[in-house]
Image (tube, rainbow, N blue to C red; front, side, top):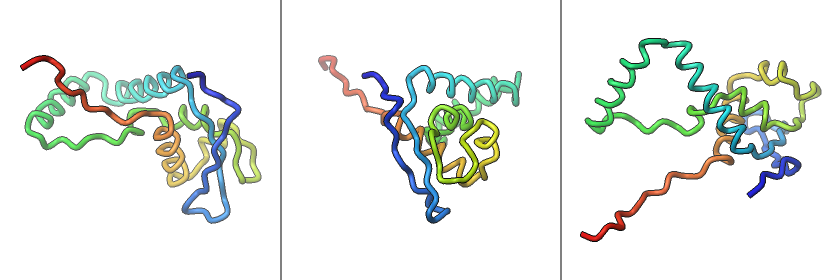
Length: 131
């Protein structure tokens, strides 16, 4: 299905009564870019230590102790907001600089909502091979 970039959804900001943001769906390429930006941030932050974290994560998975990450953490917030936010009730225009200036509560709310609208839930795969 093609993404209609002209269709928007208005979200009321729960912690700011009377304030709203209009968001659009993202394309697959835009979501891929947001995922890549998040991966790049981790690589830049941890560099060679990524291998150590991967080994720790595998141990956690094998032991059943590793929590499932929230889906939005797999996508860069600024990239998601840059593509998803179309309008808002604030007097300032939607610009990359103003998106960067959002408080953490508003940024995180929008990040979660936009990612949730653009990702599908994991589907369990049934074993279809004969026993």
